[in-house]
Length: 302
Image 1 (cartoon, helix red, strand yellow):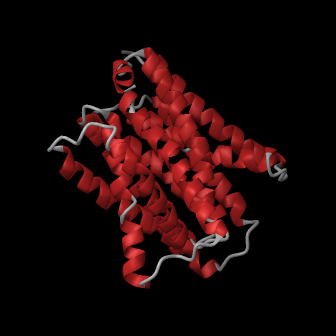
Image 2 (cartoon, one colour; image 1 turned 135 degrees about the vertical axis):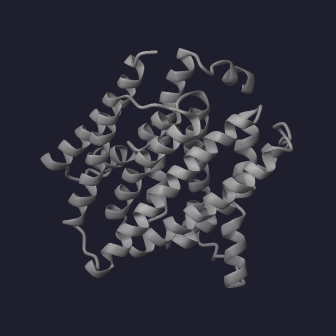
Image 3 (cartoon, one colour; image 1 turned 90 degrees about the horizontal axis):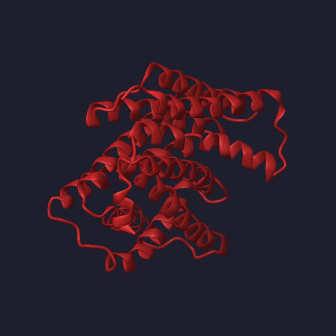
C-alpha cells in the first residue's frame, strides 16, 4: 500500500485522494473534538484516548519499516509540539464553552497553517484561494459568535478562553506543518504514522500517573471513550497526514477545518437540532470557502 500511495504523489489522482482524505479528516475531527467535551473532563478524556491509541499502535510497529536515523529527532520535535497542543486544548475546553472555543481554534489554525506552509514548503495561495480562506474562517467565527449568544458561561473568563483558543489554533497549525515535513522526510509514510501514534500517546498517561498516582477509574463510558476516540484519531489524524504528503499542506489544512460545518450537519441531521437561517447561512459560507480554496488551486496558473 505504501508503494501505491507514494506512486500517486504529484499526480492528479493523488490530489483527488488528498481532497477525499482531508474531508474524511474533517468529518472525523468533528466527532473527535466532541468526544473530548462530554461527560468526562477533557484531561481524563485526553489521557484515556492517548493511552488507547498508543497501545493500538504497538502491533503496527512490527509491520512497518524501522524509522531511519534522521527521523528520530524529527519525531521528538513532533512529540513536543503535540504535547503542548494537547495541554493547550484541554485547558481551552476546561475554561470556555466547547461551542464557543472550538470554532475559534478551528478558525485560526488554517490561516496560520497556510502561512507556515508558505514559509516551510514555498506554497503559494492565489488571491482567489485567500478569498475562500476568508469566507471559510468568517463562517467558522460566525458559529462561535452565534453560539456565544446561546450558551451560559462566565463572561469574565471569556478573554482567557478566547486567548487559549487562539493559542491552540496556532499550535494546530504548527503541528500540521511540522508533521507534513516529517512525513515527507521518511521513505514510508506509515512508519511515521505508526511511531507517531505510539510515542504521542505516552505523554498524558505518564503525566496522569505521575500526578494522580493511580489510573482513571475503568467506568464503562470511560473505556468506550478511550476506544472510540483512539479509532477516530487514527483515521482522522492519519488521513490528514497522508493528505499533506500527497498534496499541498495549506489546502489540506483548510479543508480539514470544514469540521465545524460537519459538526453542525451532524447536529442537524442526526441529533435533529434546529438550524435556522443564520446557521444555514454560516454553513453555506464555510462550504463556499472550501470550494473556492480547492477550485482556486486547480485553476491557478502552473
